[in-house]
Amino acid sequence: MAGETNDSWLVRHEFLLRRLHSLSGLIPVGAFMIVHLLTNSSVQNGPGAFQKNVYLIHSLDALLPLVEWVFIFIPIFFHGIFGIVIIAGGLPNTSSYPNASNIRYVLQRVTGVLAFLFIVWHVFHMHGWIHADWWIDGVAKNLGGAQFKPYNAASTAGLALQSFVVIVAYVVGVLACVFHLANGIWTMGITWGAWTSPAAQRRANAVCTVFGVGLAVIGLAALQGMWAQGRGEALEEAIRIEDQQYNAAVQAGILKPNEEKRAQPSEAEPGREASVDQASARSPR
Ligand code: HEM
Ligand code: HEM
Image: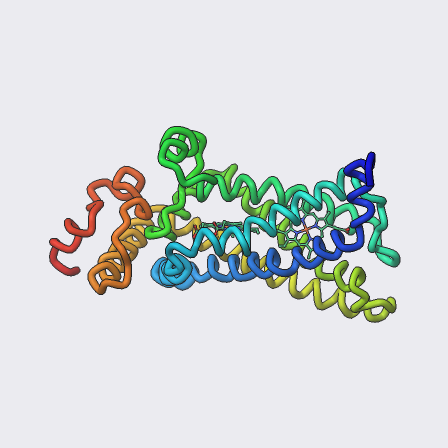
């Protein structure tokens, strides 16, 4: 209708938008986070186990950016930006906590904001946001970003986690995201009418608490395991294993050589060979 404001468009489509926001929190964003934390925690079985999982993801090759955008980035942008609109009061405040404490209502919003800040920074810290050389080498690396190299997965992620401030930011970020998902699943059950009676809500509450505590343990185990691979002898051993896996995969013809996805010698152990040709020339250990 002529003369309508954006607000009224939001309000007119509120039901559909809220349902899409609610759904996107679980599928695909929540599902991605669960798989992501489980994959990261595989580092507890050693750098080789984590590297195998990263190769599996990167075997999507040219399809990877499409899959990332469709199933990860666009849903997170939608859920995050619409979540900020809700928090900022862009929609009437119809709380989905009829029988529950105000504290959890507030915490869902606080952890939403923390999740937003954490995810934006985390993707910069690991990926650098944009894959253009001028940006990665000229800007992102100078600001502490783009530290993760998929073909030296555990060692570069571990090195990126060595500062105290960074570890604190990850602990806060991971716990905020996990609380937000676990509490969010409980509020979803109310939004969609899955648990309506106080007794059913209490039972669902217990299940969501167990789920949240379990996922928090997995997330913190991932963080500890990754951090441990970034220091001392474990770091040298991780690089050696990752290089061996890379060379074996390239020689078997299942991986295209790609130096950009490997740590540069300056980013890893001094004196480490950078190219597969050099590495394949040395005698097997
Ligand atoms: C990117 C930053 C994020 C922001 C700003 C945000 C914001 C919000 C807000 C404000 C709500 C409450 C909606 C309401 O009660 O009306 C919410 C619900 C929810 N969020 Fe997020 N969120 C973010 C990230 C995440 C992530 C990473 C996940 C999954 C891991 C997630 C999963 C959920 C779920 C499952 C709900 C429950 C939906 C419902 O009550 O129907 N959110 N989010
Ligand atoms: C235990 C703590 C975490 C660690 C060690 C970790 C590690 C990583 C690493 C290494 C990458 C780069 C992956 C690649 O390029 O293959 C990455 C990407 C990403 N992480 Fe995390 N992460 C953690 C927690 C989280 C949490 C809680 C979220 C919230 C949803 C999250 C969201 C993302 C996203 C959206 C990407 C980009 C995905 C992509 O490019 O395909 N991470 N993370």
